[in-house]
Length: 273
Ligand SMILES: [Cu+2]
Image 1 (cartoon, rainbow, N blue to C red):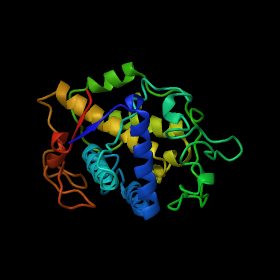
Image 2: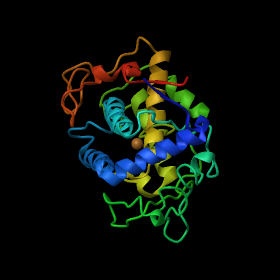
Image 3: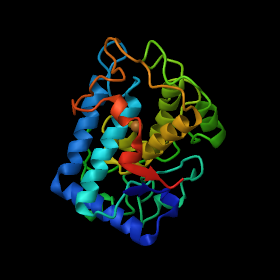
């Protein structure tokens, strides 16, 4: 079974294999399907209406299922590959090794924010942005420019300490673990990281940037860490909540998986710690 590791601990070979699998999915067109799906949910999830992927309790199980599906596609290309996670509380500078030319490449150039280093640079011809919000065909980043600091470990710990999974009104106004982790409220964890990276990562087509998977893998790990810290705190709501995915409601787009099915990740993968 796949062990998801901290990206900072990957060997050169593991990095190369992960990148190669990403490029292969991109070439086949399957990668862009994930970008399209994510954007469709970002556009349709609404605080006052139906909400599944974001700004709702199912933010965490939805992304867990989304990442499992993506990881399975990578493993179809190379069965040795697992998603790595990026602990942005530790590797928090624009010069961290995650942004090296042997892995994700660095920030964008000042003129047009175009990423020009690493395997996803436009000039390689292997990473065109096809599912786009502004028709620019190249990956963009502006690391650390729209918000200066990534969340700290102390900020993460303050959110992990919250004992209630989620609260009414089950949206971006909620208190509780889910919304503080998602970032619409409080110290702002997940959302802030998207903004810190900038470029496509700050938009609905954020999976265009491969760092999306490493970011969400760490968010997924934080959910697992939270469950371990609060073993008696259930997913909420338990049932009969309009516009929201209750514990045993199925989630679009799969329609055959519920939050209850996603609570235990160990059938699919484990973490290195
Ligand atoms: Cu996200």
